[in-house]
Image 1 (cartoon, rainbow, N blue to C red):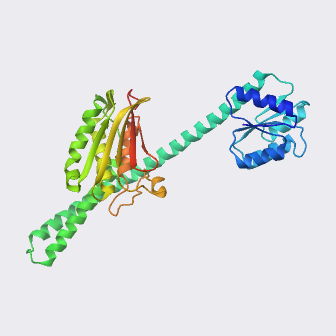
Image 2 (image 1 turned 30 degrees about the horizontal axis):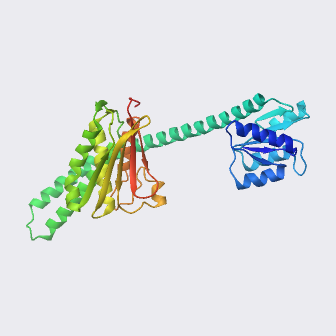
Image 3 (image 1 turned 45 degrees about the horizontal axis):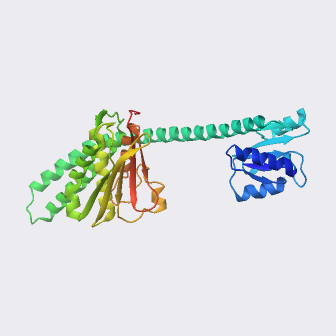
Length: 352
């Protein structure tokens, strides 16, 4: 926070009072100097005198609320009056304090101000989550409708391709055409399968499970691809790890997808490291690979439905993984920097 007052003694007194209470405090002698500080650094709160040379507190208040509306301003004056108090509130001041004041009065005003900011940030976060959930629900509905509408035509095309395939000799180029049609239909069927999975309303059947067993099963399923691609998989478990309430089938699919994704990202030999352990509020599983670092523009959209950098991908794999994990009351994050690492948090207590 920034204390602004042209009286050195009073300014230093306020700085010491707030610093002793655990706040990080800077100071300015007038409104102009305060605006320079605000342009150079980030502040949450300005505590300013009204009567000052160069730029007074009211002018400072108007400038702050115009340029930095997220910063709260508390005004102080030795010449309090109803009109100045009304002006301060009209121009956007959070509070108005008359000098002399007690230590408790200043700390109470500052505490209320910071609590207001915290609640505003929390409200903004919850609103963003609601908007995202509504958007995902709409996408899920459209995806489910599209997938079901595609299924019947795809089945007909598939049967026709199989019929044609049996009526041409191996040397007939028309047999190759029938095989190509069949292959493309299989690709579209995989897409419709992803659409349907994304549109599901996940209701996990939670049971207490051993995290070691879950991860070991996923690694066993990934072993064949790892051997073919010459990928070395290393496990690092912290002990002890408590049992976790989860849907074994759903979480097994998520881990299988993340391991496949890690192998695919390396496009050849490399290393995958799987870590698991206890952390505050639950447990974590982290899957790292030695592939290239993910570009910043891709990181920003990596969990976004239908966003993909793969030629044949639907862009739903990570979106589905996030939905499954969140249905367990957990969270998944892409860790910053290299190596590429996806970290899953799962609560030990059922928070789904």
